[in-house]
Image (tube, rainbow over all chains, first blue to last red; front, side, top):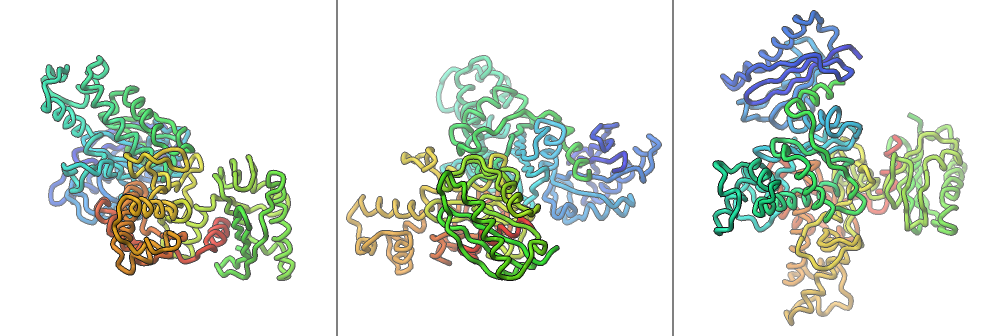
Length: 312
Length: 312
């Protein structure tokens, strides 16, 4: 194995680039803007230029680089081809091939950003020491990544780990962003938590600290719950019940050693872990009930770490 | 690769042994009884003896054998150790190690029988040509096996593919064999289908061909449904709804190319496939909605085929 490798986390606004030692040590990281002009045709060239510049600054030659891993916000086939990525303006783009042509590097692997972040957390984050990990990302939406035997499960149609779209409530009348109803994302995302709070606030005059909040956010709900606010505690329980139920279903499929909980909502910390784990234990199949629950540790760097891990 | 390999399907009553060419061709197969005396201590020796005899009969030497794969009816760790197998009387048994000592063979792999059958169906059965397969076995219970990238997903606690214990009905009051409630197995197994029929027959005087049946079985329900019996059609729809919903949930986790439906209930054929697929399409995430549905093709031989595939 050569001494260095690159991990690239390509997002809709910025590209995070990490130069790593192949031992896992992050040498340095930086960001460049994601230029989406003309259907995103500049993006891969911009990244290739920045990778070359990064090596130049450190007086490292491309011959010392083991490979380049890239996480992208869309479905990926064969660790190479991105199939429609609205956030970047892309249609079908063979990212690995284009990057190989620009850099002369052969070992290039591309993965979906949520899956790649899961791999990063397995390697150096909340799932460290494990090979069978399910990552749950609770942000604006709910994403996920499934790692089995140390490898990403991308899925046959690029939908591996799309756990936000598991139906957890058949009776739901509101529609998920994907067009169907009753999906986990509608309850356990930051916006789902806010929606639940607004429903409870509107349906009665029941007192709650949330009524004094300037702005209802998922963070506000957890903060008020920690202060003992009854309505906020009810919302936290509701979110935990939906998540615990969904994760128990996942255990019947891939039976992970550990669930790693990340994303903005996970800043609620141990209270969130506890309520998920309690509800998981209620419905999990007995053999899987011993799965561990950990908070994600790498934050926004998980994508860079997972990206580089793909090529090591 | 050597010319031959063994696939062994160790069941609670009989052991099925297949001598294969490593190309996939079954040379011959036979059965021996599973002797469960004294905590099943004779089983591995019996199999080793029979494997040796099978080679002798064909004038093949052990040096020409690539390996021995073994499917067992219990949870398996590290492709080697069975952890409690009530059907055989076993506690913790290192099957691969014991078999290696008795046969002098190094390449020995052990897998859970449902997972191994899934691998067999992927290799030579309903999932042939695919690497990402979910097998659903509808028998007395509901079992499953998850194949990702051509390999079994055993799970960290040996519960990979335990899809019969996915909770699909929170409101259920009856208890599943595992002690929890509302699991897929309670509705989609042969016994679950019979239970549903009995509930409908008892709750009113509604006419049905099922009232003329000497004995209500899952087969009887599908047979009457095919003749247009309204109540039987309702039961088939009920089963399809529960299965379709569960398989859509599975797609959000591992996103397979194909679901292979096997076990005794699958003898109902295309009617079963159609009702599962229709209900799957209703709730599946759009990216995964194109998954194929196939009937299992290897019947009781799937275990032998999958077992040998593990060592190839």
